[in-house]
Image 1 (tube, rainbow, N blue to C red):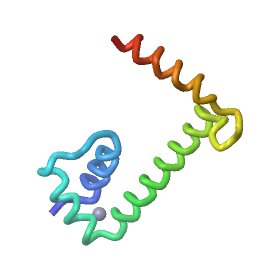
Image 2: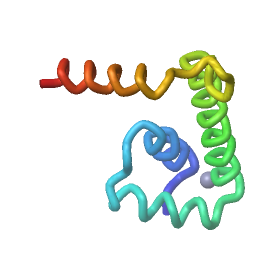
Image 3: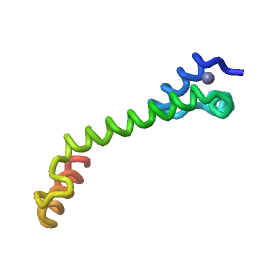
Image 4: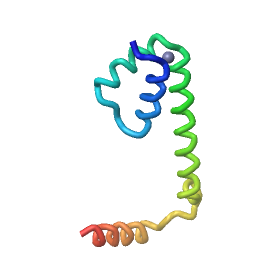
Length: 86
Ligand SMILES: [Zn+2]
């Protein structure tokens, strides 16, 4: 049985990279039996999605507004990106 400390380590690791099955399996078992660790995981996930939304808002402030690109601008932007990728 995984200890809570180890489970917490795996939970935060799983946010950065997918776990191997050898880690995922015991972690899943632990989370199923340990309300404290599954709550910890829930909070970490909530925090992460909050940060992502905030980053999104900062990076794309015009989203949802009418300041977006025209279809022509979008097409030429896509073309420029495609060319620079070659
Ligand atoms: Zn635990």
